[in-house]
Length: 509
Image 1 (cartoon, rainbow, N blue to C red):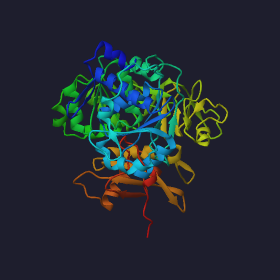
Image 2 (cartoon, rainbow, N blue to C red):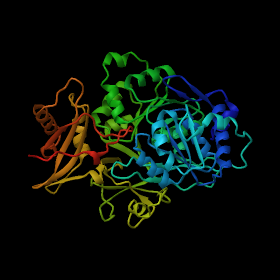
Image 3 (cartoon, one colour):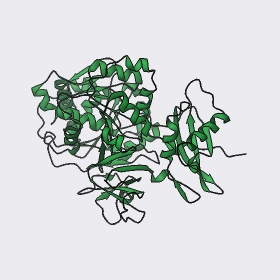
Image 4 (cartoon, helix red, strand yellow):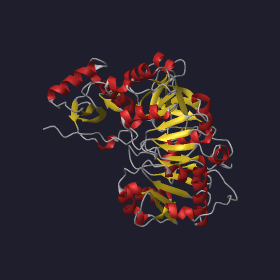
C-alpha cells in the first residue's frame, strides 16, 4: 500500500529513523511532504514518465522525494554521490532529468553539476547549496490539496558501471494508481521474509543503490519502520539492532566479514535477539562467511540473487545453504535457464549464461537498444541476462561462478575469479581481495590477485608466497595467482561491488 494509507491509520508511527541521531520521519510527515513535493513537481510541468534525480547521502528526505515521484507517475533516479562530476552530468543528460534534489552534505558535487542540469526544479535540503532553492521553504509554500490522480511511478536506477559507463535501467510504467497492489517484490518480501507492519528494517547501505531502495519501499508499503544508518560501521550495526529492536536487516558480504572480524567480546556486548531475518545479496559470499554468520546468529540468514534489472530472483535459507554450500537458491521470480554461447540450454552441472524467463522483458536500457538486445536470449526475447555465469544442480539450485566479463581463460582452461577470491577472503592477513585475468604471452591469461592487508600486517614477497600456498591448499593449483599485488585499498562501490576495470598490474622487468 501507499504510505498515505498508513498515515491515515497510524499517523505518528515512525516510517523511518536515522540510526545515529534518532531523527524520525512519521507516516504523517512522509505523506504530507511527498504530497507537497508532488505538487511542486506538477506545477513545474513534470508529467507521467518524466525523471526526478536525487544526489544525497543517507538522509530521511530521500524517502520524501522517492514517494513524491512514485505518487506522480514519475521515474525516481538516485545517483551515486561517489561519482565524479562528469559521471553525474552524464547521468543527468542520459536520463533527461527534469527535477534535481540534492543534499547539502554533497554540496560540492551538487554545485559542480548544477550548470549541466537543465531542470525545471532544483532543490537542496539540509542547508544552502548554490544554485538550488531551499527544499523546506519551497515545500512549506506548496499545496496539500489531494492530487487529481496518482499514477504509479517507478525507479530508473543506473547500474554501478563496474565494466563501463553506468546503464539506465528503465522499467515500463504500470497502468495503476500508486495505492493499488501489483509490485511482485512487495508481495515476495511479505510471503518469504515476513515483512509486515511490525517490521523494523535496518538499512546500512547507501540509499542510492537498488536493493536498499526496493527494500525500504516494501517496508513502507507494509507500514513498517526503516532504520537507516548514515554509513556502515560493524559495531554501530550491532548497536542499532539492539537499540531499535531490529527484526530484518540486509547486508553485503563485506559487511558480514567486518562484523565477524570484530573482537568476540565486542560482538557479545550487544543483544541482537530481536533479529528474525538477516538477508545478504549484491556480491558473492564465501561459504565460510555464510557458515560463520549462521553459527553466530542462528538459522535466520537468507541470501537472494537478483539485479537492478529485476529479471528474476532466487532465494536460499540457512538450512538449504548449509546443505548446498555455495548455492544462491531456487527461483521465486522468473523461470531459470542456463544456456551456452549459442543460446542452447545446458543440462544440470554445466556452466553457462544465467537467463530468467518472464512474461515480458521487465526493463530496457535507456537509450541503448543494442545493449538491451544483448541482454536478451537470441531466440526468446522475454528471456533476459545480466551476463552472470552459473549452473544448476539436479534439484534446480543455482550456483554462480562469475560474470562473463571477468572469466579468465588460461591455457584454454576457464578460471572463475570469484572462486579464487573466496579462497583468499578469510585468510587472517587479507582484509579485502580482488582477482582478475591479465595478459600472459604463454597462457593467454594468468591469474592476478590484488590484496589489501589489515592494519599491523606488512606486505612482502614472503606473504605473497604464503597466500599462493593458501590458495593451492584449498582449490586446484592452476587457479592460484601468479602475481600478488598489495594495494592500500580496492576500488569497490559502497555497495560492495568491485570495479575491476580500475585494476592493473605493473609490467614485469
